[in-house]
Length: 342
Image 1 (cartoon, rainbow, N blue to C red):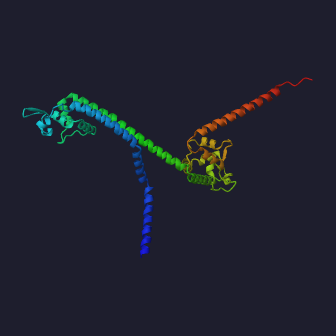
Image 2 (cartoon, rainbow, N blue to C red; image 1 turned 120 degrees about the horizontal axis):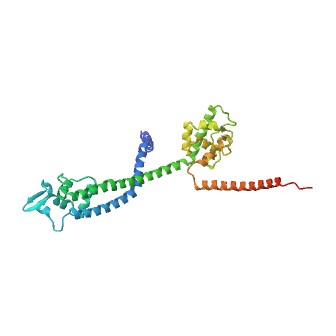
Image 3 (cartoon, rainbow, N blue to C red; image 1 turned 90 degrees about the vertical axis):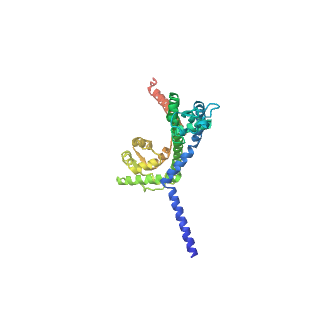
């Protein structure tokens, strides 16, 4: 009994682990992982946004403290009490004119820290007092156009300027980081040996099937083995398979072939141009062996060595042509030279 319970328990654990692995590989968790990675990538930008934001808040806190805060020795709150208890702009209390905007200024802009926090609340659209009244309305009634002008300019700069810049920088850095990670992951997957071999096998098998469907015969038996493909060498079993240009243009339109070529990082926007690349001799046909070699050279982004190799080959061809031109000129001179007289 105990042994059975232990076996059942281990089996359940294995099933749970398999379910967990399946869940981790699901698109839902992949999106969650991308979101977390994007947040981590954006942390440096977020840190500098916080630094700049703190500096801006400090500067505007000082400005608002000097503009709307109490002057030295002012203590209307102690004499008039909480401003939320008044409905009128000016109220007489024990011979003291309690102005509502002055009281709110003393309450919310009495110190630099309070002024900074109130400015931050203004950025978020929170203008309410403890009693639910509007600070902005009270200040507009008390200070008039002076406050209206400052407040409108402040909101335009913050909402349409600073916030948009913050959002753009954060989104740009996060998106760029995610694209870089996706590119690296795709690059690593595309250049993994097993991945390349699997895709090449599938591609050649598909080409074989399409070739047979069109009534073409093989000179030799087609083999799926692509041992040594990563080093640019294909199996000699595919050396007899020949595809002509017309057939290639027809085959390349197959959806499965397109997907396999895309998985191998081969663009097929111009089938005719691709065939010319796969057929360097220009005889209108290409073997699967040469196709495999060409595909391995075409994969990936162009590198410096590709450009240099092309330049070196062109330079060597130019030198050979110059040498041939010299020989032709010598032969032409010998032919045009009049025969010696007897």
